[in-house]
Length: 614
Ligand code: AGP
Image (cartoon, rainbow, N blue to C red; front, side):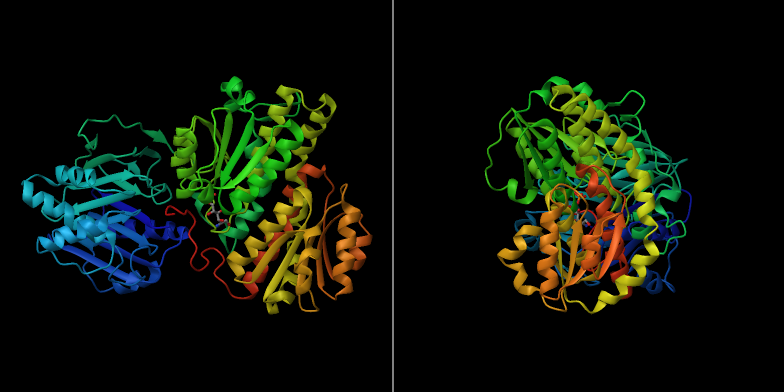
């Protein structure tokens, strides 16, 4: 969602800020803006609806001098996406400018209070209310900006990551956060700020993740002061970023999404590194080793997630139940948090989130924590909110995922869930040693099998074009591949804007079969496994109604292959690992249909990479 960049130091700020905004474009946004304290002492705010490129055109002939500034990409929440509502927002006097991620929930009474004080508002945003409120406190109390920000935030309900600049003090940048992440990059007498690390990475690898309800003041001399809302000094922990610049560039691919699909073999190897030991035939997860008793005592697992991460969770349910015999429930975080669920201290709650910032999942785990459950996070973004809010967890270790449509994070989440299931099953001895060893060996071979599937790229590109006419798609899968039907359909919807639905194959005859005619493409996920014959019957039912059959089958299959209009073959594997293979052609199908339809696959309309509002 919204993106934040800030800079103070000896260099020209504007090029750094704009480059940072480009780095954050993947998060999804609808307008952009920049504020600079110019060399002549003016505070200039430039904003524009649309892309960062539109902002760049807009400021072409403007004064963009200055060595301190803030910039923002906005994903509209309060007020439509237009230039007025875009950030940064000025205070009434025009002396202060603020950028903000998150939502100020009590902005209405605050706005009324400010209006009663004679303040006027240009925009419909909650953000403008906050900067007016900060200035009001500063003037009323006669305090400095740092204190005014603290006092204002003590009266704010909601989530925020903010950065403020003050025309009368161009040697100081103030930032604060609660609920929304903020990263401070430390250079030589300079500071960079980002809503995530991507805008900072080419300048420094020394970073501080600002903590909840912390406020930081950075000066041009290189001083950094961090306090909490009670003005108690905090000692920030300086961390070293593990990302490289190449991780956030396209590396010769036309889109991040395609790059990330192709990165999957290496991504999964990285996720398994140090965890899957093929020599010793073992699975070692530090989270489970360090919290062995608590995890082994769990009488139930509850998985909370949203979107693609929820689909990974559903596969997690199948494998955890199959291998460990512990009952598993999979919950949409947004439903779980509001429906007064039964949670006890015997529950193990697994929160899955690529970004680690999804507001609903954060709220769901907070609820589970309050009820005494043990919390395990599976996240990709290091230092994000969910890993910090959980008792333990496993990072995916796959590098940044920039494409809005999640691909490599999904397969890595599924892999991590498989490792967790295997580790618990081994400990509880719920599967035989022989089967455990077979699982270890087979999981190790999955990245290479994905590499082979990626060789289908040209075939997928060629045949996907045929389906640009379609207004609807059906995806069918059984057992471990039912969640893949859901995920395949979601991928297509997200980036091609074609309506698609996933169903368990056998459900087709309970309704969706009415939709099948000669125009309807039906994607059948049918790897060879114990229920193959059942899926074959479903395929025959589709064929009898002239549906267009696109099948994902195991090499050597003949029956479904003959009934299919188009088929894509995958190598064989153990049933529970098939989702890691069957999803790959589906990701490619979505990508190439979207490309053929001329869609913006990396930044599809209305979507955001990290959904930090509910
Ligand atoms: C994935 O393609 C989607 N963009 C979306 O469903 C995503 O998985 C969901 O918003 C959850 O995000 P998270 O994994 O960062 O929590």
